[in-house]
Length: 136
Image 1 (cartoon, rainbow, N blue to C red):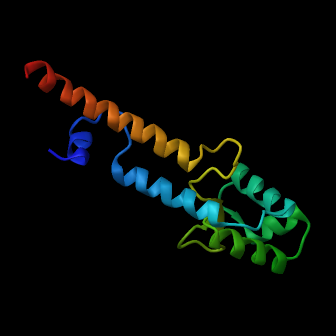
Image 2: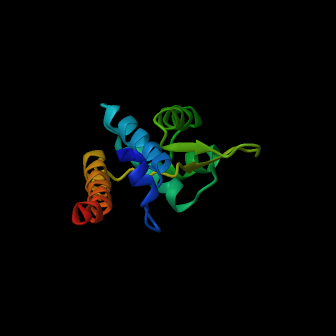
C-alpha cells in the first residue's frame, strides 16, 4: 500500500480532501507571488465589498468618493489577483470579495498548512503500521 493511499483510506471526518488542499495551496501560492502591496484605497474597497457583497461600481464610486474609472482600475487589479469577483449575469454588475480571506495576519501560511497535513499523514501511516509491527 502506498503512502498516499494509506492517508486517503484513513481520513477522519472534517479532514480536507487532497483536492481541497491543492486548491487552498494554489490560492496561497498566488497570494505569495503578488509582490506589490495593496493600497489603502483598495483595502477600503475590499472592506466595503465584505460589508456589502454585490456592490455596483456606482455604489463603490459614491462610497469611496472617487471616479468610476479609478474604481474600474482597482476592480480590474483585484479581480486579476483573485481577491474580488464579479457577479455573473446581473446588470448592473455587482462585485464581491472572492471566497478567500485576504488578511495576511489572520491567514495561515502555506508552510504551516503543509506541515499540519504532513504531520497528520505521518500519524495515520504510523497508526496503520503499528499493528503490523506488533504481529511480527
